[in-house]
Image 1 (cartoon, rainbow, N blue to C red):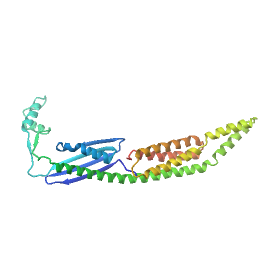
Image 2 (image 1 turned 45 degrees about the vertical axis):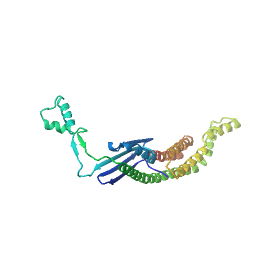
Image 3 (image 1 turned 120 degrees about the vertical axis):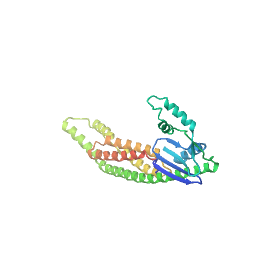
Image 4 (image 1 turned 90 degrees about the horizontal axis):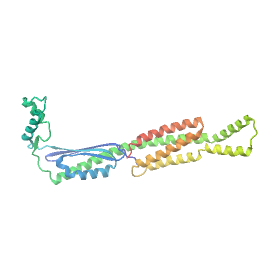
Length: 288
């Protein structure tokens, strides 16, 4: 199967006095890059959340945010007066700041952190478990998104591998008489020279020359790599790195065929094969 590294998931849980929202965005990355944002009151669950996210999402650039909103109407926040006064005193000492405009100083000071004292209730263990459950639901949503994106990628890969395979079949047909044509051209070139040559030596040199242009092994290996690519996509787990390695081998065989072909029509097909493979490699960066 093919799983994309691009995904999105969001889950919301409404408790008696709090609303918990977990949002996850994932992008492609060579390794796991997990960025977690969580309120300080829930930090004791950070390590567990990281473990769950790393185990379930495996790889990619992951932004996971936990937002907790207090919906208790009676709850509120009190102004930390001493902290505000400290900020105002520091602002007054700065040049070009109008220290006589008290309202302006208060306005600026209240934008700084720690100027409000929250009277929220202590977080109990059951709520911490709820946090983890919401995270898991968001991860499930991300995985569904990744699976759907992966299905699209798989369809695109199948089409492009099929295109390369069809171009290879055309090359195989054109290659059947290619070496015979090369042999005829060489024999004609020697005959035009009108010089007597050692026939045995000429045959040896001719065989050596034709072997350098023989692409039989490359055709077989390329066909095997294409079949292996399709087979690997059907594996029960996504094999992005493995498919990347197979793509490299496909490219190596295509390049060798192009360098050995010495045939205009075959080289045109090689260019088309390279174009299809390049599009596969671009999309491969997104595969888990």
